[in-house]
Length: 396
Image 1: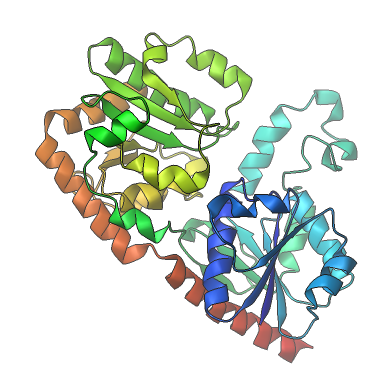
Image 2: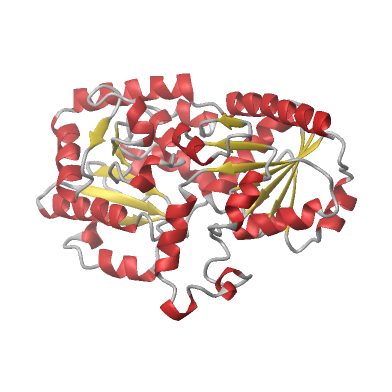
């Protein structure tokens, strides 16, 4: 079996991380994998050694097929989201390769498009130029073209059950949860002073960690986390927040206005790569995924959550998506509103009761061991591919 993963961006994105680990897992099962993305293929090394070949849009589809030697036999294209850049890459690829297409969903694409469209000048919103290469919505899903693309698919995958709502009735579907690197499960359950000092943090300081990019759909939530951390620090709690990810300039300007925030932030964005995140987790005491049960969050599965749960640290997260599968006070702490005050209060629960914090972290890790595995996800995905290929062969 051959699988070509097509992605709207490269391996610097959460989607790229998912593809990397799935492709490696599938390769271990004997599946020949190739990636073809809209970014830079050389970023593939960010997560370790790939067991597959990586290419990007600088190579034409015809050259891609020639270099890899794949043909239409037992070959499947797995397209990461129906966004315009992915859709066009698949269109050009299927022009030279007759293969069924499976489309993957990991967010509420329509909500993302609405948010991105809101930033477009009014006089350009109805023009097609905003959807062309270089346009502000080239990385978004077109309201009409994406639906037609989904309707033409041979299969549909997604990372959370709620996203099945966007699956056309006649298209077979498969849900798999994202996971994390196996070594995260081996991290000691409590932070050691020496690990904190490694990142310039005092041994007695409490440490948060937020690895993730900020965009129009989540910046308000992330600001609430920084507000909570700043308020706790200003109130006398020796709290630090390790930052890793790209933030828009206006968001950083907003965060800079928070009292005591300079004493809080430890920015490792330029100092490490994603492969070092497990090492950073050794210095962390608590982990927070900010947010609330909003329409946007209901349809997503933040890729950092498996990492958080597997680390053995107590995790605070919204009562939505993964939170619906967890128990407040047992294997996590849940947020109902996602406000800075609520985040601060839930953090104080953990600070005031270390025994409770340790128990929640241990129970969260136990949940992760049972539910999060790239190898398990790859095995289920391979079985789904086989079903799609059999169906396509019958149709042919």
